[in-house]
Length: 248
Image (tube, rainbow, N blue to C red; front, side, top):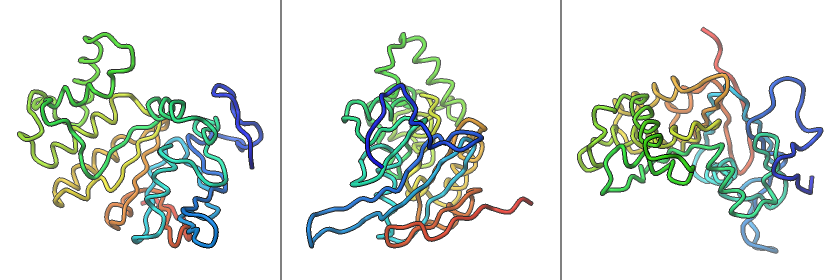
């Protein structure tokens, strides 16, 4: 499929009856290099992320997970195929337009926390709101609420060096949540944590699932992947299996 739609116009004919996908990859491929040296990191992958999903994407090194992450987060564009966010095609957007989509729709949580060392926890969360046109008081109130949501309001005035690894990851999670994204995307979100803190972060992820929001975790850790209700498994740049956890 080719072509693009205006930013405020949904692409017709792609959504089936029922809830519309929050994010959709439509027959996407991603090639690196050219000619005989071209390597297919992803090959003809289609995936719908629906409201309420708690989804994990798993696979060994080289399976295409990192490439998939870049496309899901609108950090990259496919060689062929389309990416839709909220029914709007982002494939042909320029960098600034995709940045606006990311800022509006997607919250990111990475294995490395990417906190700013000289800012306290509250200041780090506030950075996600700096370009939202909010008054300082509103930024501060929303950031305090996000820290409270992850159980760290009492540590709001601590800088990253004063926080444990698990606390730093929860600050990063609050920063991802403060914009109220429809899609929360985690890249190996427990990879730098011990098992106790990893369990704590996973419990918070599970609590963040809602009928309106999707939680998507990209991981090689089966303990993390199997905690999700919907699981996609990748190998050699393709989706090889998809399953849902049976109801208890």
